[in-house]
Length: 113
Image 1 (cartoon, rainbow, N blue to C red):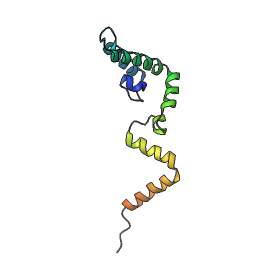
Image 2 (cartoon, helix red, strand yellow):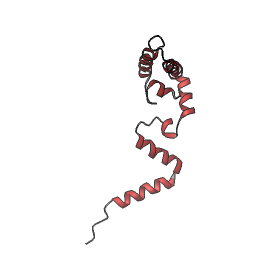
Image 3 (cartoon, helix red, strand yellow):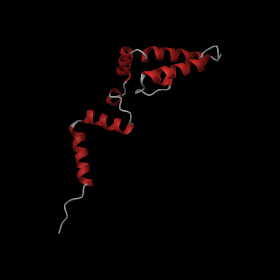
Image 4 (cartoon, rainbow, N blue to C red):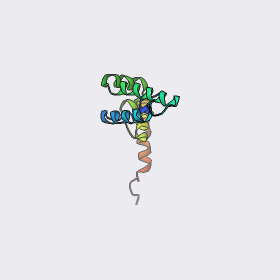
């Protein structure tokens, strides 16, 4: 399970958000409060997630291992921007040429008299 999903966080969450989400998850899923087996599993997942995400070195390593592309590595929050950055990195000059061509098509030409 993804550690961020276990705590209900995005990849760009700060340390205070990680701590707060962990406390909430522990209160909600603790086996003493909820005897269901899935609650115990979620409780353990939250503990493992907190161990990794609260340690800066382990978090950077985890982020590198689970990144879904360059957008995640750069922690770009907006999905449409992440998509364009990923395209730029993968496609290089071809993508840049495509963007330039699209801009030219949208720009009005000089007036013809």
